[in-house]
Image (cartoon, rainbow, N blue to C red):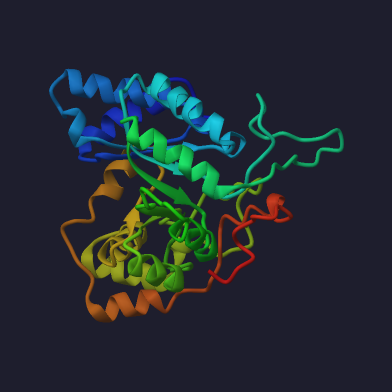
Length: 296
């Protein structure tokens, strides 16, 4: 949860800095502010709607086909926009539908729901056909779950993207290659590591931004380790979505287009891969569709 007004001011600043891709979700509880920021910047002539790329997400409690369009319409209503550019299945794990986003039983155990990714996908395809969304994608899907959709009989619209954790300590070489072969763009979250919030982050993982190689490459270009980590992914075709509510860092994270890494530096950063996830989602590891048991 962001403090009231924070998302509004940060998105307006980001548009002024040059950002055009905004990654949101119903469960972030701030889509009304993000939409207001976008609409205000359109109104003052800074951008046009077609310059902005907004990604919304279908949460786990809305997987049954009849709940998909109403969930997307909630996002559109909050944003006060006619369409989103991309709408993605946030996780391949369905939860019990209802008012609660994180349904639990009396023992505090999460209540799951029968997951049928193909049926959910068909409902999303209908949303695209109705003009509510321009493109469809997924998030946190492993290659088996992607395969399930790609091989679905009668597939109308394939997933264009898979949003997954991706950074120098978790470079995702196999998933990246699989997605490349299938024309699926990888969108990398936690591209500069993550906050150290133990409720959802593996805090035993080493802090990425203190890595000696990233720091030393940064010195060469007069850049920070964060800028080097972002540049690394962008240079290998991974879309990055760094998250920040700090005006300085929002500006700083955008300043990665005035230098490029050598082949040797790219290889060196690739070799930092430790196959370490910051976001393991272990609280849901007993879900039948938990995506991270598979190798990729």
